Length: 134
Image 1 (cartoon, rainbow, N blue to C red):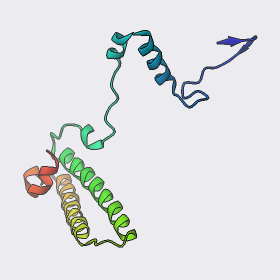
Image 2: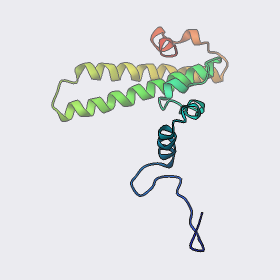
Image 3: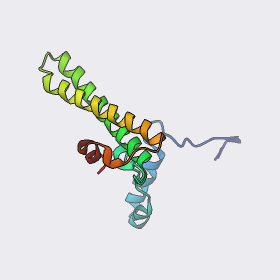
Image 4: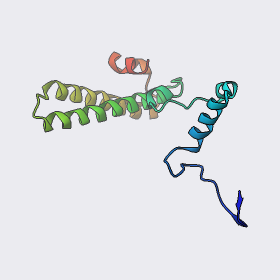
């Protein structure tokens, strides 16, 4: 866009009031009654990593997926643990959950070692870990 002989670049992020260009375009289309173009827009992908896992069709993919899920749950449990400690609340049930997740993680890591040697099947995982993959 040219303004007074100089080139002015339009920001694609936000304007001075903090609104994104995408939101401004959508608002303009809404006001103009252009509903059909809104239906054509692609919905953003979920930010939840658990919903974006690729299909688990090999033992290695199953182990990696289980490892990621367990890490996420362990990280979440550790965050809750810190909050409870700060509030001086009972953390016994949370410690048991953390210990169980650590055991599951150890099992998965051992499975990854066995898988490298070609000696692993998903059915060797404990049922609780297999259920994480469903």
